[in-house]
Image 1 (cartoon, rainbow, N blue to C red):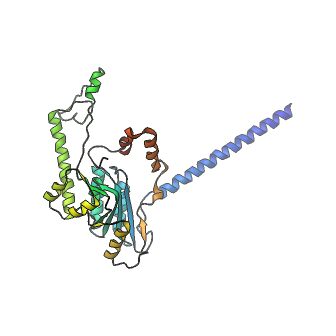
Image 2: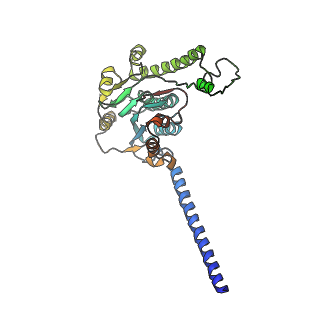
Image 3: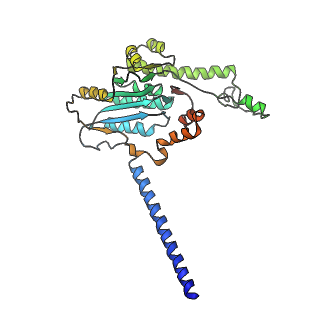
Length: 314
């Protein structure tokens, strides 16, 4: 009896030891993965190749307002002696005005010292067009949707619905305009005028960026800037893009500017794809949209966007 008990207890101890080793191995594995991702999460080192090369930056999906990593990467590449130019590959309907503006300024600073070419895919609209205009050359496909120069500020109003539920919200404010961005308060005519003023000012900034980058008058840009999108074929006739073609055409233009005859001249990703963390998995949103359906798709796409946006809504 005692022998059987001892065997049982010994087996339990070994089982627990094995479990501890397995858990420890898993913790060590995931720790190594996180450390590896963190170590590769930033921009490519300024001297990563030690030989002249072009950097390639892909901007895709909704542009969020926090673009600090990309801005830092562009500044690093701008200052790197072995980086000779920037290939900016854009496939985005736009996004936050603040994010678009920050990227616009980063691309503008880069373009002041080194050539920049943009290659647009399916879309390069609104904030995505905003960040593209400082480039010396913009290439789009004939079917690319671009332009959509404009600003949108959506202000939900749930006050009427709350009233029907018998719920009232009293706002104690320091000024009449303080609660006019609060969805639980009714929008007053004065509040609407104030918010329209914000949109108008942001729109004016957008127009100025396009006019400067595309060498057009502000009057010409405003005549095109009622929020509509243009195909690449329409945009080239309007002066919004320079050439119809794909990424290969953009690369060819950049090589000509740099007087590079070798088609195998290195093109290095500015921010490696493996810098994504697991929770940034690109398929995450597609999965959620498939599960929740089209009703919530725009909400998922605009996750993390606050304030005014410059986005092409399809």
